[in-house]
Image 1 (cartoon, rainbow, N blue to C red):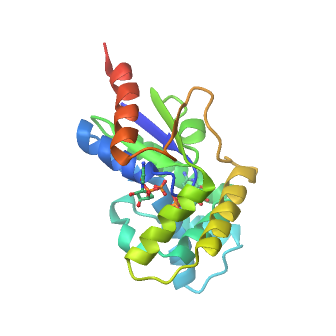
Image 2 (tube, rainbow, N blue to C red; image 1 turned 120 degrees about the horizontal axis):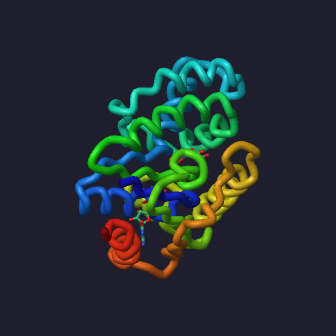
Image 3 (cartoon, rainbow, N blue to C red; image 1 turned 120 degrees about the vertical axis):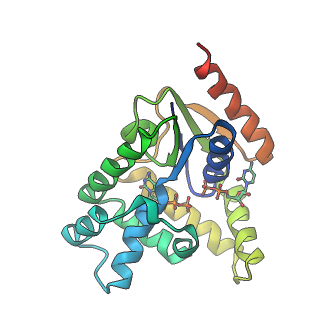
Length: 208
Ligand code: CDP
Ligand code: CDP
């Protein structure tokens, strides 16, 4: 069983994916962390973010077992990740590793931007999770202030819009719903309501 979850930044993909994985006993991979790991490794090594061959080498070295959200969560790493994510060679290397993960029994939940369209187009359940840019910016803003970071709401909103544009307009694997994806708009939904909506689709697919 593969559950593919895509959508823009701060739509609630990770929260929903972790909840579904715990409920069904499936493995979970936040594929955004794989792009973040490449970006962080390049920055740490003092390498440029615009050299595809160098970035490809770092992408091939990413170890899915060693992805640590706490060291990859910085805002600057997310921004750098969306820049190296436009490179086809980087994407190919990471997609290979993501596809291997998706086959782990008894099932896997993968969330990102291109899971239903490119990584696992055969997934029996595809969800496209979204919310308005304002709501997503508010969530990110609240997360930042709750962790003691100073943040400016309008700056966070501008960043969200810039990232949406880069993710939706790139040539390779742009963010868009797969034709057979179920849409879940969480703008006015609690985490619980989003989980229950998703569960209905998964249960229907699991029915013999
Ligand atoms: O957590 P947030 O939604 O801010 O971003 P993320 O999921 O950590 O992803 C960071 C960046 O990696 C995104 O802006 C995308 O450009 C890229 N990404 C991608 O291209 N394909 C994926 N399957 C996952 C992430
Ligand atoms: O993974 P992605 O970037 O799409 O979003 P997330 O990190 O799962 O969620 C961003 C924030 O929105 C978190 O602080 C969640 O608690 C909150 N949230 C949500 O995920 N779903 C809702 N229906 C409402 C709020």
